[in-house]
Length: 346
Image (tube, rainbow, N blue to C red):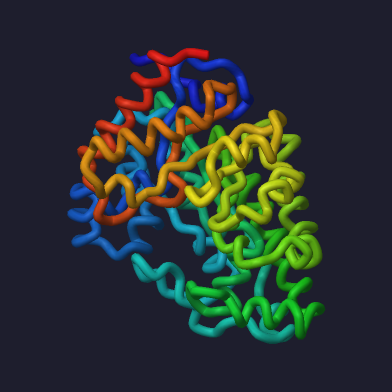
């Protein structure tokens, strides 16, 4: 049996590694032909709810690529189903909520999540994978703000204007919603750790629509509470959001072990702002993988040069892999990053 590859976990702890670890957001899913074949037979939610199918999809990229971590195949919105929210999952569009939350009465209808009862299929998939995988397994939850965005808007939005309007005009309702979400997401995160994930990523995907003052007023207390519930468990916690150039220091202060950086901020600039107390994940533009491979190499080399061989760099895209991504380009990139970092030690 192959030895366990802990390169990713050592990088999360900012320890020396023999080569830069690589994994990709959305590496298990829509760009893989074997996933699309399954998707023709099963509804998306059914893939999430059947543990053996979720395990199979999680393992698909590991058969193709020498990635250094697996991310659980699941969906951010599953806790909302457990909280009594009626929604549909539309691949490419995300969750579509039937009755968005707009008033305090809507918040009161949300029930606390009980992960072992409401989401047993997720935890069973984690237990199976923990026993089988030879690389670390990453679990995930949506951040409180991002989950509130789906609930209030009803679906993904370009600017989340309804969300911000609720924050400003009905702060009592907003804080009540964030309290309920933070408690349920904390329970879900702890349950994933108890089931066996080695690390956990918090997707505060839409936090970049806020300015720092509004973030501190309306979101920071809840994101900090979520990370603080995980700190005693001793696992790496990755905080990731899109368009967070104005919030990098705020995200580090929120308690993440690793800060995910999108492609809009040069990685060396991000590191100089964050200091050496956190690891950094990123930050290739996922659209680069649609270009000829010599262009992919050019951009990947820039990311690695900006990392400068510092302990604590995890190579990833700055957001999820696009549906059009050629799997062969992913395979070649993984091998190239490993080879480059081995040839350019500190």
